[in-house]
Image (cartoon, rainbow, N blue to C red; front, side, top):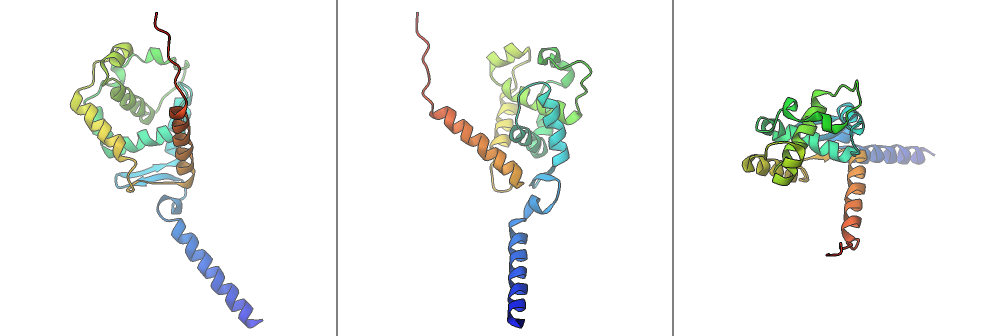
Length: 182
């Protein structure tokens, strides 16, 4: 009987230690969606920007998280070389009347538009100046670096990102329909 209690105590201690090891990084911090060298993205911050962007267009949490991380990893510096929020023709976004967007949401949208405007055809369609090639390259470097091991995501965000990656792979694997030439 005494050995059984000792065994249960040891087993419980091992289980707690194993749980502690798996909850390293942002999982050990309640309310944190991702952690990197540049800082943390909280669930509240991610939720607010996701909710605000959902009013404008279809966007998933994984994409919003990537953009928020990009802002922390030099994206705010890149915004200095992008059109300001006031310069962007926001009437084209069909933002519902009375909707107030946070500074973070405006920064995420501006960063995304700045990156998209590196393509002259897209820039013209958006009514924006073409993004400077150095700024576009800097933004690409930032977004490409976000997949590195230095960025820890919560289990929830990692799961969402894996689903998004699977959907992208499925779309890429589908045969493309050619439009007939006239």
